[in-house]
Image (tube, rainbow, N blue to C red; front, side, top):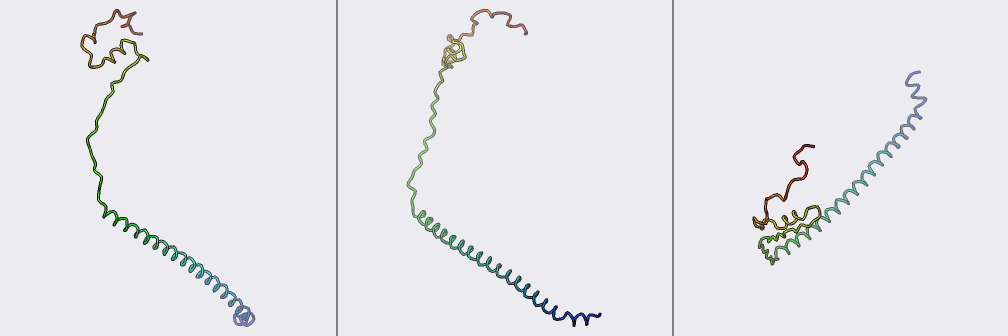
Length: 131
């Protein structure tokens, strides 16, 4: 069998198959074009809405800027410096001995007589010995 005999026997079937294939391809291609046009129209609508919103916001911003330009500053800033008040702490006997609390409360204003450097007595035990 040659090609010519096969073509004569299957010619009508091949023609029908080619027509069905062409219709299927055309439907697939047309569906793609339709979906693309739908996406494009949605995109254009979104861009149009964005442009309208930007134009509206720009108009509002221009009105605010014009209003701010006409306003005059009516506030005066007074800077007089910072005044610090230092409160002297008063120590209480929580974990200090009464003599130490007295010395801390006297502070730097105490006279030299009040702050004696003389020991109160003998050191108990062997204070210098290593443990």
